[in-house]
Length: 471
Image 1: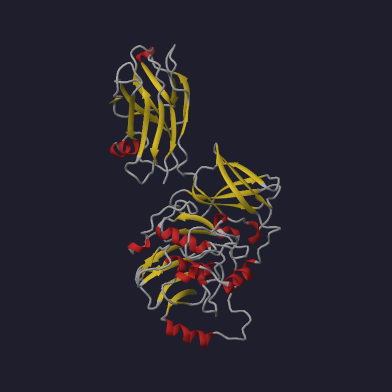
Image 2: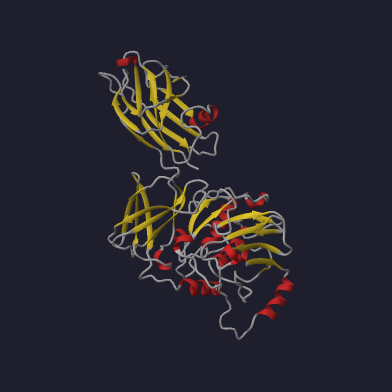
């Protein structure tokens, strides 16, 4: 069994409304006879879309971390069905002033990012399929033809020119990927086609599909029928999320006293949609803390309430990016040179994985007219004496990577020397250097070494600076 979203010109669609819609029908939406259990709420995308316009939105959105292009559009389309506004505000779609999400049901998705293939019929993956079917944009299918309570797969025909938005106005003959994804995911969660022409779950699209991004009253009534009306007294709710010192802290309400779980999005393309989970957590009802598990990438965080199965057991989603460009920080004590100079380290730009330049380390107030170089590592901070009698400390844990030597400039016996290094450009030009290939989330520590003949060991060091590679 398949459910497909079809295209129709406005005139034809209006005729179909008159024929199909029955004024006496008290329930316009249709249900397919199943609901998705907690174990199959995951959503992934295999990004094989061939239209250039399907992946031309490359603007990062902090409410949807790690996703761009077709992946971002599909994520937003699926999240529209969730119980509350995504990430608390629903930001990310200028076409929806009210924001993405807030279906008023108990339904949630568990966003799991990229898939490694189109997957099987029950693998919960969105992808493009070659060829066409006259008048059909996309279709949803499931194992054994349905019901699909153990999984689904959504395919988008390659023959159409897909557009990832998020603009509300698209070029002629483009089809809005987010709107079509929203409709198809309605089938995946258990809804059939509606008799209401303004509903996202109506079988036809008039225009380019942008209006299908936003579910309407009939759609909300349908998902509430399948998963129940939102229960604020029982369903867990997330308010805030912080990551500090490798520990995740969530605040909210309705957490169980024990056996709670935190669900994270996996890092990188994944062969399965199973969330990364930290389990067995106790709570006072409003706070959960856990060390950040390995294998977590940018995406969403949800809480599974201890002891509560079914749709009311999953919380709303908050955006989470453990690989974000954390603020650059300085640490460790800089040594004082023989002429009283205390170097000051700083940085400009962001150490982006996708960039080949644009993150510059800088040192000022350095001894003038000296040889110097930056060195760095990614094994953590250190604070060990540089040499007996030296005021400098080694602030970077071995192993180290040295960069090219340079002159501090300025005048000897003064503190007017300075150094700078576009670290991102240097790393791109040295593919065998420590840290390559650069991976988002890797934390680096760096320091300046410089000649100081009158000092112990004839050298001195700045303090340390720490930065994180980001997507």
